[in-house]
Length: 186
Image 1: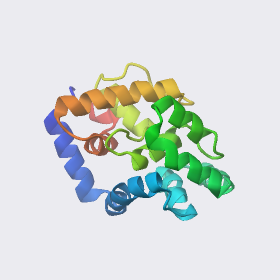
Image 2: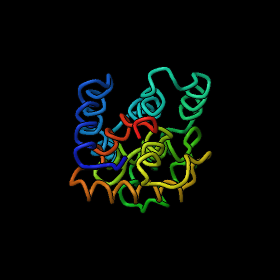
Image 3: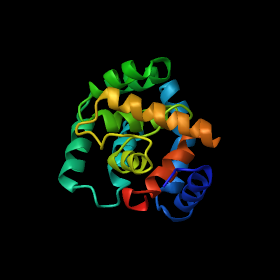
Image 4: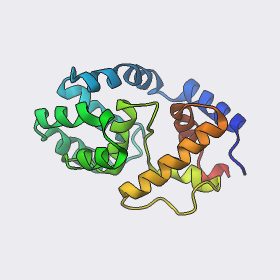
C-alpha cells in the first residue's frame, strides 16, 4: 500500500485522539526548543527526553534496557549536557549526533529524540516502529538497522523530509502517522 497524504492526516489525527502522551509531548515540543537554545533548562528537562524515548512504548520496551539508558544519562555531568544541548541548532546533523552520542546513555535513536525536541521543524525521532512503517510503505528498502548509525538516521531523515514536503505537513505530523502505522498495516 502506498503512503498518501490522507493516510498521514488520518493516522496523525488518530494519534492525537488516542496516544496517552500526546498532551505532554505537545507541551515539550512547545517549550523545549527555546529552553535548550537559551540554556534555560534543568537536569530533569534533559532527562525527560531520554525517559520519553523509551516510555512512549508504554511498557513494551524492556525495562532493564530503558533503566540502563536513563541511569547512564543521569550520570553525565550536567554542564556538559547543557553545553551540548545549547549548541544543537547551530550544528549540522552529523555534528549534532556526534556530540549527543558522546554523552553516556545516548545512542543515535535517543540523539534523534533530542534533535526532535530541540528543533521539531527540522528533525524527528527514529525508532524501529517508525522505520518499519516506511519499509512497509516502500519508502525505505532496508529493515531497521541494529545499531542505527548516523548515516542510517540521515537516510531516514531525508526520506521523512521528502514525505513531509510531498504531503504538505510538518515532521511531527508525519512522525505521529508513522507511529500509528506498522508493517502489518501494509
